[in-house]
Amino acid sequence: MGSLFTPENVIALLTALLGVATSAGVLWYERRVPRRKRIGYRVQMDTPIGSEVSQGRASVRLGLFNETPDMADATLVLLRVENDGSQSIGDEDYTGRGELNGLTAEFTGRTVRGIAVTHSPDAEHLMDHFTPAAGLRHDGSVIRLPRVPLNRNEHFKLLVLLTGSHVGGPIRVSGGIRDGVVARNKAARPDEKPPLFGPAARIITVALTTCVVTLAGIILVRDDSPPPMDCAQGTLTVTGSTAFEPVMEELKEKYEDECEGAGIRLEIHGSNAGVRKLAATGLEAGSDGSPSMIALSDGPRPAALTELHGKRVAISLFSLVVNDTVPVKDLSLDQIRRIYRGEVRNWNEVVEGGPDLDIRLVSRDADSGTREVFQRRVLGANELATSSRDCVTKDYADAPVLRCELDGTDQVLSEVAELDGAIGYTELRGGAVPDGAHRTAIDGTTPSLKSIATSSYPYREIEYAYTYGSPPANSLVAGFLNYLDNYGEEIMRTNGHLPCATPEGMRLCGEGWVVPE
Image 1 (cartoon, one colour):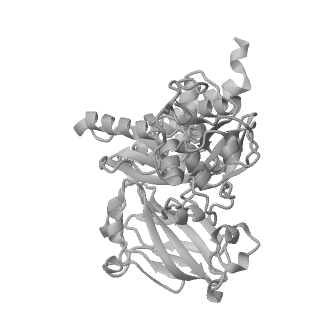
Image 2: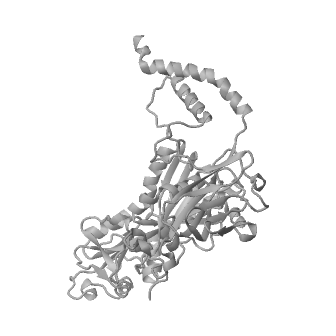
Image 3: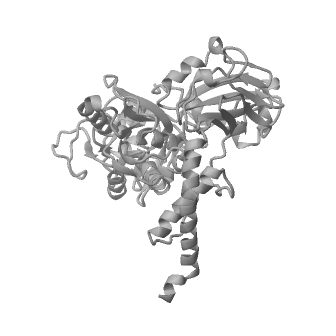
């Protein structure tokens, strides 16, 4: 019996009694005190992009304004404005003077040169409000925002080009909300320490949670950090691109760890298979709404699948890999195309003084986005028909070249590393290639995230995340896509992808590339 009266148990019992005593107070508080409307804002990025940062990473990547003296001190700010209160906010809830005046964003010491507006995946309707006629305008250091109605958890982002000062200057969003407030967002991110003190409601909630744990007889080491705002419960299926699979594996573990009640199931079989599965699943669901599924695709979906809504999430880099028996480090586009057309069959026909080895083409199957990007961006044509099932011998003697197909990146890398004279292709994956194989440049250019902004390297593509229709704002699909934008940057970069949400990625993800002649 003495073991029951440990200091931990005594504290737990006292906490439980405190919880019982405060229950009436909590009930009164919830019934008597109205919940406030709240618009929160946070600065997600404040970075220099002018010519004065010529030694910094930003100018090397962007190369902007080098010939424009009045833009030498240019900076780029990404400002997120969100309804993180408990009630929706309509245009009548704004109390600013004039019919159009809503919020005001002020960038002290800097001058606004341009504005771009983005929105959450489920809030396409918000864009109708961001026009001069609706009240969007800027003057000097101030942006006047219209009366934008925001449902709970909806947000929009302002990408603002500024001059006149360096980064780190005061940024403030102000305005009047009837029965509510506009305040800098205080929500802690996963890498921040939880606040020592909070509003009364938060304190009561923590106390009651502790009581429940104590009364259940469980004493745990808890992390009281609030979960990310993009957390949602349920089960989500992610399918599609094998190139993006390492990113999804890491993000799945991170999301499930931070978002209790969420389960992510990965069913990765290739980009084409993924978008077809999403379309079929959505069609079966019918009027039940958008299924809890995301399909990742290396490049855009087929034009006929109009019910699939896409979001650009990253730029993916790919490369050719060659067995180490072939000491080639660089191949021209012409050489690559002749190899894959079967016009040359031995490596000594490709490279002067090259080894006397038959060329073996180790390719991906038709569901692969990596293969489709290779055909579209590098070859400018489809690959030849399969002529080998084992990647070692031809199934029929008159085939122009030995070519086999495998259904995964790991299998391709393994076969290329094992087979003399083999050549294949893979995503960048942060530089990981097995012993026995090596990457080759294309026309003297190697794939690199550091030089992607100025490189002519052709084997790259925009990675899309597709949903069937528009998912609900509070769904696991919408939450996971927002989480990918807000917390997935480092994971994507580590695995060889440039996030579209970065300043550099925003520009490149809006561009297209043509297949070199």
